[in-house]
Image 1: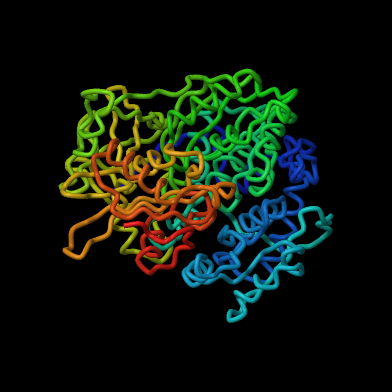
Image 2: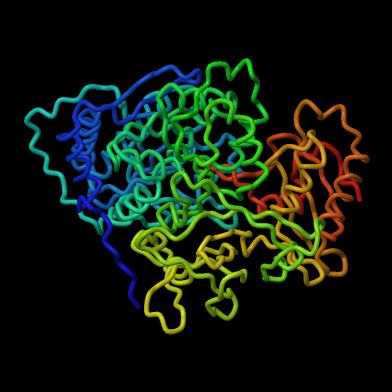
Length: 584
């Protein structure tokens, strides 16, 4: 079996290390990264030359203490320390493993499983995290023999006459392990090489139309592929500046992010759908006074289901502030393909399509029979230059034609090598074949259809389909219906799944967070009744169990995706943080 390799990189750099050396020589004084405070003030910055110097100093330390191929956990709060640590590992041939700062609640944390899987030699972290108030972080690793290294991006380093030799780095060298979000299973380490990254970055450059003048503004965590590759590394790839801020700063004050786009004349910003919703829900004319979003040319909406009503509300709210609706850029991707699989075209806006809800559940795509049967789906763009996308029947593995729902398969040079030390899962995911085609294909596990023009419409996850009495229901559609019932029901705060009843038949469960300000004022029984009525009217299915929970109690991945499988298990074990008991 062979994997298609289409060389796209016009500058033909052999690795990210070679590219950094080029940037340090050709753009030494240009700002590469800026970190903003929670209020939007500039706290720190790195030029390309400074990044090269400080990463190289760290690389020499890593080489002296370890061996190329060793793994290093990168555990940092959002900031420039992470950037230096990443490039230091790249230069030393050490395999970095970006990871979120461990949660205080270890039962909802993947630290242990990731650490066990990758067996790190080093733990790189910031001086503050190493000696600050989070003593529980070090305690998580007390049973292992790890070399802890504090990385301070702002510390000056002199290369002096140190003769430590750094290893040669090529395209096939592993750049990092990107652990999957764990939305449907335990996290797995995707093996991403320098070539994978460079190929995908070039695909993204062509799709975004990005240049050295294309400032990026991002609050997405750097341990997540959307924050790391789609934002920080893409900006680095084209030689542009990337302004970073903390995720918590955005969640608390979304306007700070929009004002950063205004202040830095941000051209590209990539976020999940819920971020657009949050900007609208927290909008006020007073806070937006003087805001100018006319520089924002590529507003990527990806990482979770893209909703047409979200886009409409955002466009309507921020068009008076210079936002061009044509900047909306729906996209689709996953860690197994480095990051990006499909995207729109710069300035083309988004496309929507009204389809039959009932036929979509049966795997077909056609016009709705009426308003009650209508569902609006948003296109997530087309195949990138150098890759192929196919829709395949997940059971008999036949390629499907346009307007048929099946599994998304991907073939291209950005598809990763496999999973770290998990050959069984790698063969199942990365070595699929279509009859008559010798290439290896990536099985994404996502359901979608292509239209005649090649536009990709994502409809759901295979493992998360709710099947009741033989009819398929997409959980995100049920969740959206529930959250539209009342403002008290939090957007992106619900999970729909099925469980067997006493007879073994599948029944629908809806778990939904209630906004904090409504917790003590809503009529529980009335709300449950309204939810059931809406679900029955929209989806012709009865929600046997409707459970309202406290805000923040719903399990989610690091990128904000709802973990429906985890929510289901918590419900079965009666471990959800209930606002009220289940109403039968």
